[in-house]
Length: 116
Image 1 (cartoon, one colour):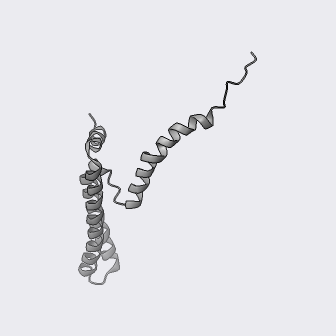
Image 2: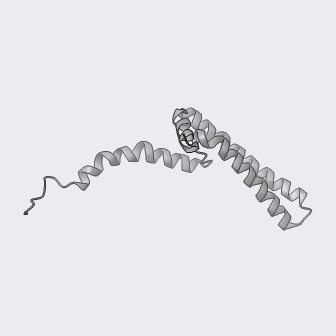
Image 3: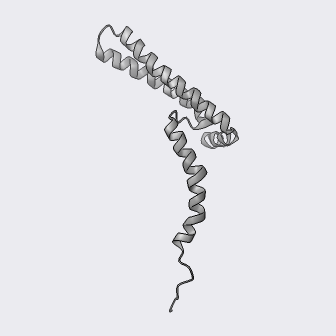
C-alpha cells in the first residue's frame, strides 16, 4: 500500500469532529508560526531586511512542512477555513445534486430516431 493510499484510508476513518479539530489546531499553529517567525526574524536580523526575510521564510516553511505531515493524513491540511467550507459544500451538497440532475439535463427525453 502506497503512502497516499494509507493517508486516504486514515482520512476516511477520521470522524468529522476529528477532521474539524485537526483543521482548527493546524490553523492556530500556522498562525502562531507565522507571527512567531516574524518576531524572531526581526529580533535576530539586527536591522538587515534580507536576513530577516530569509529567517522568516525558512522558519515558516519548515513549520508548514511539519504541520502538513502531521495533519495532512487526518484532515487534508487545508489550514484555511474557506477551503474547508468550500470542499464541504462541494462534496456534501453540490456533487449529490449534480449526480441526480445532470442525467436529466444531458439526456433528452426519448431516444432520437436513427436512420441507418
